[in-house]
Length: 160
Length: 261
Ligand SMILES: Cc1cc2nc3c(=O)[nH]c(=O)nc-3n(C[C@H](O)[C@H](O)[C@H](O)COP(=O)(O)OP(=O)(O)OC[C@H]3O[C@@H](n4cnc5c(N)ncnc54)[C@H](O)[C@@H]3O)c2cc1C
Ligand code: FES
Ligand code: FES
Image 1 (tube, rainbow over the protein chains, first blue to last red):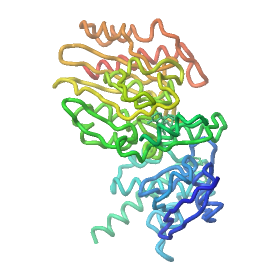
Image 2 (image 1 turned 45 degrees about the horizontal axis):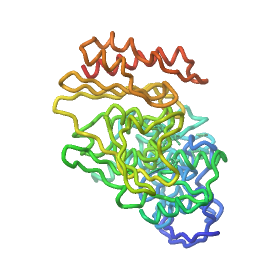
Image 3 (image 1 turned 90 degrees about the vertical axis):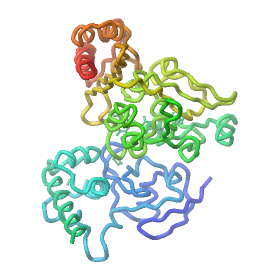
Image 4 (image 1 turned 45 degrees about the vertical axis):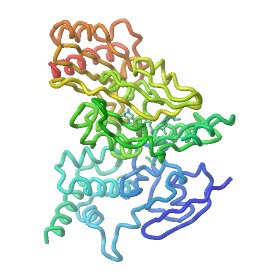
């Protein structure tokens, strides 16, 4: 039995029929073909699948698509403004915040939630805020720098 | 609410879905296979946090994040906010709910110990109406509670303690999942009366009466903590052996008691 859901993803409305057992991450990747959101584990641990549902960071592998009915969703594909990268995307690029890049979409979405709640986080607040995102490559130092870069840039934009 | 209870009762294997942060991982691992899920998080009477006549009332569908950031919780029982902010990671706190956590009754979960130390009551709506149960009587074993299949937890009610009460939650986290290897919640009222509860130590969260009575009758933190986790069966797994957990229970009890003394 399929269930009809309506969601807004990155500013676009979609009405789709889904199997109730479909995970939100599979709906995004397989139905909407938004493959920027990654799946890195089977145990809700790695955070690679992090997206925003109604403005808060969630692991889309730990949510059923039907639970998102009526929600507004932002994925990594929704962050850049046309050709202009989001300050976090720019920060990860400038500060070498990635190596293989597998964890990056999730890292950026969690960091965006952190900066929305706390625009000037300390280093330890950044590390604490990213506890739900694992990176197998970078050792995290440059990820923290990338978030600091973005915080500074976004702060400057706000005060300018 | 009526519709939810009716579906839960109607015969096919139905389960309540809260924030899904224990149930969905279990479904993915095929540890559970209900035919129907009833999402209760949009039921209005399960939302909201309020103070009513000296009682802090937390709707069962509040997320850990909502509780961690609630002014009413901070102003009355701030250790609950601290405990909530130590659960998992931000994504888990954004979805997981207090009602789901206590219904799941994971031995390493934080809410059961926090609510035992807070002397909370749990309001349950089921086929035969509504009942209120003390947290002490709610948890019955390893992942076990008194809940029946068609029961829905609607509220957690916590008496606001007298002025001058001190409380804390001290947690030793498993670094990957951030569940408690040992968590100790302690509340000390100005009269000296002390409640101490543990997460992560035994099959289910429990109040440690030996520690409580020593501390309530004036024993030092050190002395009272030395009595912790005696006479209970202690968990052992690949994170922490039985001896190590027992040692940690005493260490975390001491830290908690020092904090509230
Ligand atoms: C990576 C990760 C790390 C975590 N770390 C921690 C941690 O450090 N500490 C900790 O305490 N927890 C931790 N958790 C568990 C988390 O707190 C869960 O949110 C919680 O255990 C379950 O709450 P839920 O709302 O997600 O419930 P669900 O997963 O939806 O449901 C769990 C169970 O409760 C039942 N249920 C749900 N709501 C109700 C209700 N209102 N009435 C009756 N039954 C109900 C369901 O039927 C199910 O049996 C972690 C989880 C993950 C994925
Ligand atoms: S894929 Fe690992 S947490 Fe979602
Ligand atoms: S860059 Fe490879 S996992 Fe993070």
